[in-house]
Length: 260
Length: 245
Image (cartoon, each protein chain N blue to C red):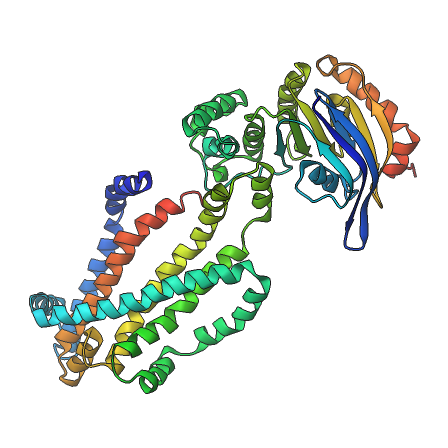
């Protein structure tokens, strides 16, 4: 509770520190406009036209429904990876044999291109939610798993001994000695897992489903509707930036205050 | 009577014999030091006495009411600030949070940690400051027995003397018994009532020295004089391999 309050208290100053980022985004939009003036509306619609289309789309219930579908798939897949990846990673970290055995498997999972998983999932699950959710899980699970594994593998033996010498009860051992360390590894892994999930969900939808924003992107492509395609890209990036910089980053800062 | 009694203690790591036939007793209010070269099994012996390792052969009987441990490195929790680190030991012993924080602040001030330091994380502290926190964490418990694992070895002379003075004050009041290991003879002579010489391969006690003058009357002259005297001792020469070449 105290922790949540501290995050809220520091939030305005965090936001205020974001002017540099805002300036760089505006500069990027200016470059985009230059691109539009050079190449014309069909290749690269102007930022103004894109944002106008975006506003229209956001007032359209059908588009909102597509976004909700995508959000549902992404959160199902990511939630599943989060729970499974953290739990299995922690467990594997506690056993030397399990962590040794899991490494090559993780390498296979990470090394296999997501597009190959999508093809396999389409054969296994057909065109629908399961294919997308499965691909998201396969892509973000190894990232979270490795984070949790590293967290438990790198626990400091000297601190364990210190805790033992002062007879820390089990709940103090867990919450004061193990948890902060493990969390400092798992949390960044969650953040990268989330970024991965959001990218993969669009790609899987584009190839394997008839609804969701990924599918809308495919439709926009086939109709050469560049403003809509760009608006969808803006939605994707804006939502990712919102989650990452407005929600996760302030938490991360507080959690990692003790780090060098 | 509170005491620590070690009888016929042997210890192995795998096939390597680390300690053989260790016997000694530490009575309440006494300071016992174990000196010897590095790698001679001193840390193992201390860990066995403190219950951080399981005894394989022989016995360690500890009837002291409470004990605390200060390590060679500070071993602070990096995600806790100074006061929270100190209060950890109290909380682990079931003290109430508010009381633990109050006591921690008192002892922090006594160890020269001003209020500006209370909220700092270990990453912002110098090595000496960390060691103060580590001492405060151990001594805030008011333990009747304190285990020290070469706690002064990484400190500059000023800080070393300062922390030793705090300990000597507590020893003179008979508040504290100490078992400590070191490879620094002068440190042992300054602080201990009895000094055991541990020879390596496998670790065994070859000689005991007693110092009868009470600690707060030992001045530099006494410590240097005793050191010079002890350095002439045959066993010391052979244990530390001091043969003149």
